[in-house]
Image 1 (tube, rainbow, N blue to C red):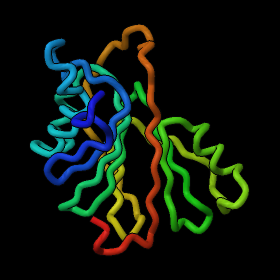
Image 2 (cartoon, one colour):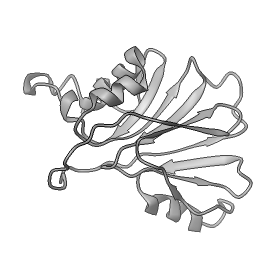
Image 3 (cartoon, one colour):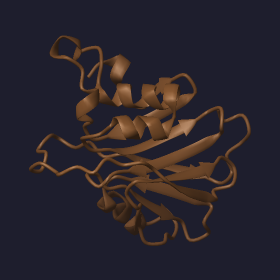
Length: 173
């Protein structure tokens, strides 16, 4: 990839990271060096909202985390083809996420990082929205496309990893 397509992708009021491949959003071969399915996904969220972007992503895989600067939210979602996990510290003042459970378990076992709850898998086709400064999570249903899954995609999977703390200041975005 190049600088234009490096993640996180920032377009309009959305900053996001996508793990997976969305077949409908793949660019033609001639544009692969300038466009990616991830960039297209994030741009569609910015232009049309998450529900329409997910509806348009009929086939493929996604674990997605994005910040909506205007709404001041962090949003997490996944479909059945990609995992996404969250893990709280025991005081519930910091939330971590990763698309590989092992990464959160590694953090949990490290000395000096505090104590943590066990990682939890996010339910597919649900949007988890966190209002910045509160760390309270709201859940809502997302549309999904009934799809017969092809053989397992053997493409290289790059994990999503991140965290958010309760003490985010008002001027962080």
